Length: 258
Image (cartoon, rainbow, N blue to C red; front, side):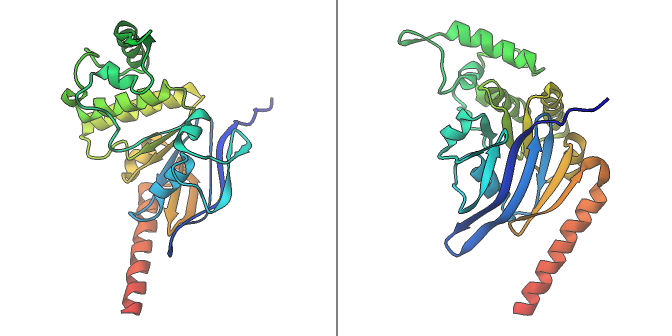
């Protein structure tokens, strides 16, 4: 009995990005399959955020190509990327604190009856979507500002998933969260992975969290992917050693230039 290959959702080949004299990305090669969670690790300034912004259409690459579901695309804008199923949840979440949970869930894509908001429908759908994802928000009419960090992150992820995203980019989803809130988001990512139709890339700093929820780990160093292994074949110790080695190399180079 043969196993059908898992369809590839996203492939980045030879992507480079420069900002004046600064080269942020150098021939980056990356791929992620449907149903797979890829952890993207790297030190500050390694190029992680730039790479995510290229994939989501915010920046256009200076070289290389991007393939979505096997077809080469030129991402003209964030809206164009979203139309192809690529969406991003950033650390700041882009939630409006003064708006209710359900209004945030349908921000910029509100349901209307003529010129009026269909609040009843949005309340019902928001509660249903969150419940389907296992997110416990007892009252979707409460303001976003009154929620915990984990609940806010869950709403931002749910909003993206139910806007038909199929390639989900999560920028530090566990940043500044306690153990309970972090567990909520890890469980949510696990549930999304089990659906089998989403490809997820997570930017992370916590190696233990990345190994817990990701299928594969990439490390970005000096604008290049230097490490690509299934999580089952690596460890926190190996990842830590790689980063320490880079730190020592950078320090030695700095001393040589001094």
